[in-house]
Image (cartoon, rainbow, N blue to C red; front, side, top):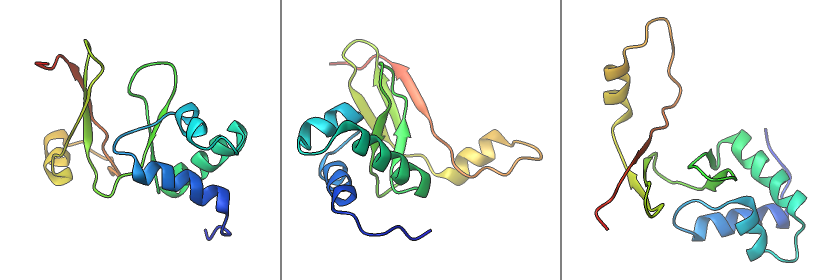
Length: 117
């Protein structure tokens, strides 16, 4: 679906593209003080729906939103909440899972543990 150009939509996407990692809607809103939080959420959900960004549950109270060029997964430290990004070939994961009668569209992995920092 083609969406009409929106300056506000572009601003939300620019914040995510410039930031390495995930941000909550509240964190995005802090960077866009001229935009109300409802508009931030509405645009985030549009981006999630069309696949431009990913909505993540990395723990905590709020969903996180992330723009990524390459698919990747997350490892989260239980002590310091550091988030590490890692990649595993999707074909390898599909082979390991071997889900019968199921067409896998995407795989999201979140690993929890402790880092050495």
